[in-house]
Amino acid sequence: MAAVLLACGSARAQSPAQTADSAGALPAAVADRGPLRGVTWRAPASGVRADLRKVREAGFTAVRTAAPVSEVALDEADRLGLSVYAELPLDYATASELDETNAVMRRRIADLGALARRHPSLSHVGLARRPAAFDPRVCTRLRGLAEAVRRAHLVPYVVVDARDSGVCTGVGLVVVEALSLTASPPPSGGWIVGTVVVPGVRGVENEGSPEYQARVLADALRRTSAPVFVRQWRDGGDLGADNPRRLRYGLLDARSQPRMALNVASELLNGRRGSFAYAGGGNPARPSSAPTVWFWVALALVGGVFAAETRLQAIGGRFFRSPSFFRDSVRDARGTMVGATLGLWVALALVEGVFAATLLGGMARLPAFEVLLALLPGAVGPGLAALMQRPGLLVLFAAVLFAVITGLWAYAFVLASRRRYHLSLWQAVMLIVWNRWAMLPLTVVALVVLGPGASTTALALFALTFAVIEGLGALRSALDLMLMTRLPVWVGAVLFLVPPVLALVLVLVAFGPDELALVRHYLALAAD
Image 1 (cartoon, rainbow, N blue to C red):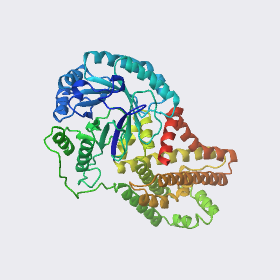
Image 2: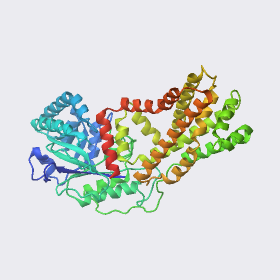
Image 3: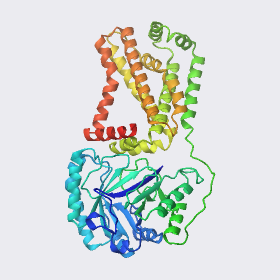
Image 4: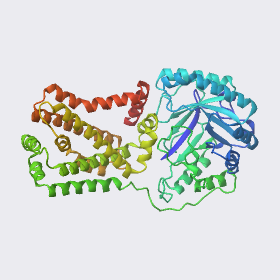
């Protein structure tokens, strides 16, 4: 997916040549060389000077990087004539986060001001990336930081999403992240262009190929005289949490090997060449077949279990027609069908894992999902993002998670009924597993419908259907337990409510009110 950022003034667009420092003027040494061309750059563990020399030799005249910036990097930027845009570590900033980090950010701004007095290359300071601008409290706090930046004689700017119409005023430049090159920039705006590179994809017609990345970048460099930045200099070179899935946008790969786009940009920027030919055809990106394979494994397991256990065949035939027969069969199966129950448990866990992986794969393109990944605490977000790069492992992880939750819930059934009826763990598992057969047809349809181009409406419908099936299954499991063991109604109600209440508690622990409001905001944008 292409990502383009447009830089514009908060009140009205102004060109670099027209404006004073407070409005975003370029350093004279850079402005004299023509349109600004830069990269998003994160300092490597070693070889900072050599890496910046490569940036400059490629024809780029600026870098966006994370604050704080080292003296070594600024010394080299001064020597090379690079303009440095330093960004504070605030991604998806909420009012509570800005309150908590206000003192730290102001000290960092003061430090940047001191550095700028010694290093003319340091010119701009990014206040936040994709802040919750719909919240007036956020805008008020950002304006305070912007004033601190101006007092340090630097230029403030903020990065927002193009799909988000809410923009804070009075924060300096506004950098708008768009989804495609078709977005019209302001007359004096600047762009940051980034196209994802997917391993194995080839051909200029196929999004995700190196050829496609090179063509998108070349078109952007030729089409505008406004500032243009590249999304990543090197794979993994993000400035913060704005790329939680670790997508590859780099002109260099993770081993610092150049991609075609770097060669094309270098030829253009150094005036050696103006037109290029790209290989057509090639291999388009294909979704992983791992979830489908795991689904067939689950179906084979279900078939094998039913073929081997004749009692299951009798239960299966009457499960939907005669619920009382099902409960009686489970009651009589206290110490039997352990292997068959285990097989069905594993099969259903795999089906749930396949559905989860398929739904998450469809949701990955939604801005709200990127926000969710970025806001998850600790290593949860990066861990889930890493699993999504390997759908087969994601299926197994979700299956194990479902099996553990089911086992804990079944044990709660055993504990709740021990005074009235000695329910075995395997009987409890049967009560839970059998009431989720509807997941089989739902997963089949999801595998067919929820491809890379699935609509937001389709994703919402499948998520809602999943919630309904799980809810009705939990309700029938609790009712079957009550009727089989004669438990009081309140006990069954508690057992039914335990899973959703625990899920709600986990959500509230993981996200504060401001974070939940930000996710809801991006969900509303996706619905529009």
